[in-house]
Amino acid sequence: MSSELQAALNLPPMDQVGFVVKDLETAIKAYEPMFGPFNIMEPGETEFDYRGTPEKSEIRLAFGKSGDIEIELIEWVSGKTPHKEFLDAGKEGMQHLRFIVQGLEAKIIEAEAFGYHSIWFKRFGPGLAAAYLEREGDPLIIEFFERPEKIGPENFTQ
Picture 1 (cartoon, rainbow, N blue to C red):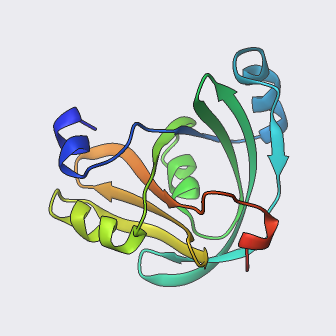
Picture 2 (tube, helix red, strand yellow):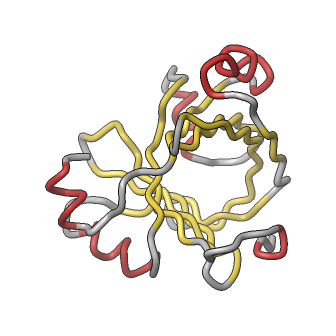
């Protein structure tokens, strides 16, 4: 993402780099010396809007840090997701960059003017939502994440 585009969309600095991995435990062992320790999260099966269709899917996650940047490892478990697409294309590694936004739906509309469209979306509750966006010819997915100032398990709903 160019700095011009980042400025035009009024985005803060990215706060996360997401890696899609085939095996979470193996990836944690490989990345822990650089980004660990990792905290594992297994949210279970969740329904997302995937390319315009409600789809149930499951992923496993692990979170580490590099300075102020969160490192997210994502293992696909089931269902249709951008992570499965990434693996099916023979890829493993960096898949997306995340930006914290307010007013997620409005921010998606702003990004459409630059060729982005939402491919994976979930509103978990008031003030908490996530969306992956892609644009043709650009292999990098961007994630917009809306969250309350203080976030806890009570903010997540299935």
